Length: 127
Image (cartoon, rainbow, N blue to C red):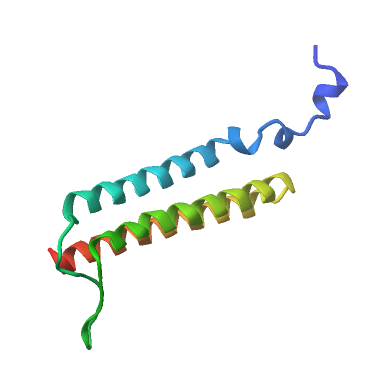
């Protein structure tokens, strides 16, 4: 038998931010993309004396040369932005703005996709 308390409960209050399936999948996708970028850079970028071309312009050619280890700052910055977006999404989720929380987390996912494209272009320009 269903009592009155079960009929009046809000289904959105039952699922916390950290137990939400959408949040889980977005977090997993972000972490996998970031680890993929790190593995990709580890495979191609090695310590060397030759500076790496970090920025390429169609009109002027290479416009920014850096040391080899600075390419690894891309995944680090991506994870920092992801953690910030995760915290903002958590705050929005508990203020009952769940769609906004999902959009913030998807923005972090798209930023990681752009990060992967940037890492690919760095490798293609140098090796």
